Image (tube, rainbow over all chains, first blue to last red; front, side, top):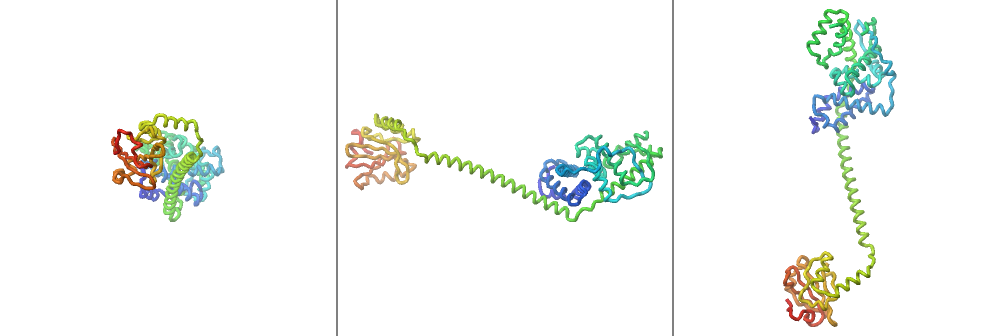
Length: 171
Length: 244
């Protein structure tokens, strides 16, 4: 289904702008950049409406457009993460026994420490609507690669954010 | 089901994966029997819930959707304007090319033509050597003009043929000369002149010349305006012919 008129375009924005913005914020860590990226994604989508044949895939399609816009921006600015890929390990995960909370700014810091190829799958995983297959399609990588990167990214977040009462059993 | 399989299945025990009910039942059954996996899955689910909630808690700026729609509207206008400018540029380029071609043709037309005296001399010889209505018609045809030359005039007295301007129109004409008298024959095309009306005004006189309009008997499209000196046109006409 294409988007032949302004009414459909408005509907697309109203239904998805909030989740797209949240994704953009988690990718960039900046409100201003997230808003720019979100606007850019919708403008780009407006020019490519013939690509959207199934309305139920609109969110995934928009997230893909936004991610591509983000990558284009990052490559042109040569931004480097603080942690190298090889340092992300999924060997041991501290697992708490007591309830705990995560401070939002610490979450963002932990996300920004990771390279984008690990940050994206974990953000999409926790946004809940995306299956591993959806994530693999958006990132254009095999399913196994998504699972592997996700495991390492989750382990990093847990190591940084989850207080450990005990060292839990290894997997 | 063993613990390794259970923990692998646990990764797919989420809404987005739509795990088959049989596998979900198998996982639950294993956790019911294995306290280690039960504790592990409970803690992992707790961590995922907390991280997921934190991940999704992002305040969305006020009026963001309006700003997005406004930006999209501006972008649509910009794209339309760019398309229009591209069309205009294309038209301007086409116009510039046409102008250049026209200027080139105009320059060609205005450029002084080199006189080809041999050609001119040969043409004159051909015209005067054996003139006839047919040869005159052939000569005009080469110039892109189809006409019927008068048959009743004596081409022994024919001297020249070409084009003249007659009341703003370019008209084929023939020149006959006999002794001191001349007859200029303007070949009138019914598409240029009201020939029928001209026939009604034959034999006007003035300035020492006489003008007579004759009809071409074989081709009603044409008439001949003959402006001649002398008292009559007879000297220029074949003796066995009569003026029409």
